[in-house]
Image (cartoon, rainbow, N blue to C red; front, side, top):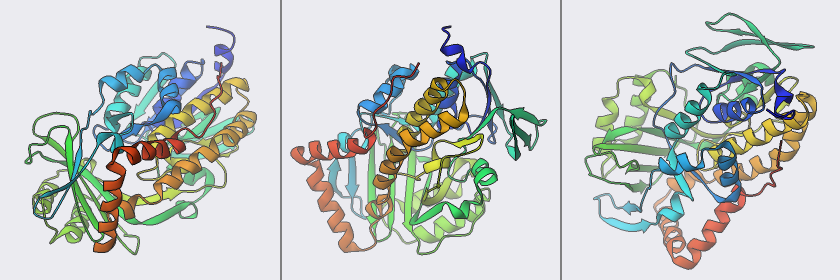
Length: 406
């Protein structure tokens, strides 16, 4: 190891969250010699989930720097066209893959698995599953941390990478209600039987305030994923661990919808645990700053947008910048956190801005708005405008100048 990569060997960091941002940062820090403990409340890495895409040269540079670009390509979904259909299933419009899936698309679970495999084999990275942070107490020399299950420990720095509803953020920055902005929509994702016999394609149907899609992006026969989006004037009060409560909400919201909604709701009723269902508000996190003392936020915990904001791309870019600034500062967190904030915050805001219209675009509130949306889809699918739209979506994904860190 060079002198530069040894510069973080004196640091022991705790990362809360083992989805994407956490393992991405663990990999970047471990390469520079730091000791890293990653704690995750789930009992194991979560499979499946949303398909996420990467766009433009910035995402590519970071994935190449992490050494996972080729593996991401090897495990990409290879999603083809996605088709808008009427209530009776009649195709209306095909959306090309270049419009919907970026340069490369992969399921969130597959990406998390790649990063987990890369980091769990390193001597200076330790994973603790089935546990979570209980309290944080900062001292002049570190952060005293207690856990729900594990013995207490003191770390030099703590990183909140635990998602939109971050426990770390609540402990260090204050209650979630101060930072979460509800955008008027909810989204649910879960597996369903592939009764449409789809293969690397998807179909979507909207009626006012609701959208249902069924897709097969991995090519596995018999497997499909459903995505449900609906509008709600008020935020809903529910327990994300209570499967029956969530099933009831979704069943009520999608009762009477045409196309494949009855079969999808039948599959929903057959889910056995809350772990099989992702259901949450479409919302964003806006914090005044990304660090408080020795605690720093990364990924959705700091600037999350539930969908449509290239959050996964932003997470790996943030990991690159934060680890690089810590190395540049020789582990001085005050200097590094300030540089991370200055170099990354505007980029994160740009990604959030793109995400702001995800709900109304997927589930327009009126039949007229649906027709307008479909017309826009049709125009964007035309070759000249498709190229323009690709550049437009890449603008937010590439609106940062990455330094070459040691």
